[in-house]
Amino acid sequence: MPARLILNADDFGLTRGINRAIAELHAAGALTSATLMASGPAFDDAISTARSHPTLGVGCHVVLTDGTPISPPQSIPTLLGPDGTTFRDQLSHFTRDLLLGRIDEADIAREASAQIQKLQHHGITVTHLDTHKHTHIFPQVARPLLIVAEHMGVPAIRNPFEQPWSLALGRSPILRRIQLRVIHHLRPRFFALPQIRSGRILTTNGTLGISATGHLNATTLAAILNAMPDGLWELVCHPGYNDSDLDDIITRLRSTREVELSALLAAFANSPQQSPNPPAFQLINYTDLHNAAT
Image (cartoon, rainbow, N blue to C red; front, side, top):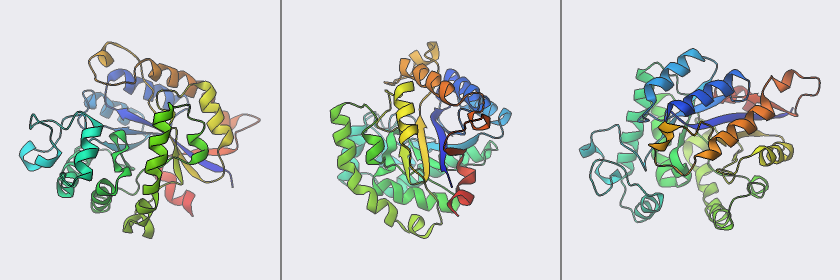
């Protein structure tokens, strides 16, 4: 049986240009899934995009840092930054306070529930969860998210760990590669969580492209796809248009979004799996994960 691959775009709902890129990629057969930000500035446009592309799997991109909460601020005090109304604006500050025990898992659960509920209220069948900046790599975040997922009927979650073979192909700066290798020791703790261990919440064998974020061009994408072994995988990407809306967003991913868009179109557009020489993998989304795992 060939490898199975979910092509997931993060940051759905961040800008209209990102939403447009996601729609174009899915229509071209170059994207199977996207994760929607409940507090994204282009949320309403993303909902419209999702409704007009019913075969696109839509998950919830849970935001716990660098953004605005859905919950009333007074109900999630340990998640807030110095202004008392928005999240911490630095991942390093979130990580520090999480490891020091300053962030309450109940606050994480409360805010994640609010974000998922907002998507469900707008008619989205949430296929899976992942997190902005991959914060659920820490068990203090993954644990409450899995409880919420099970309670709210969300059947899957991103495996936030990249395989060593993919990490080596990501062309990320050396410091980034060291960081990813250091946190890889948390992987056994993720798979020991009861919902994952029992299979009540599904996940993949690993997520590809984390180390390539900001560097996912056609060459790197081809190298990852050519090296992908059998198994269930997710490729994370951040396509979009570098337009005036993106100028108003604090993000390090700007021109690279169009590079990723072009790379994905070149690799997957025009239904390559219907070509005389299809790739040695099958494209799926998270709604197919149960059947793919059996």
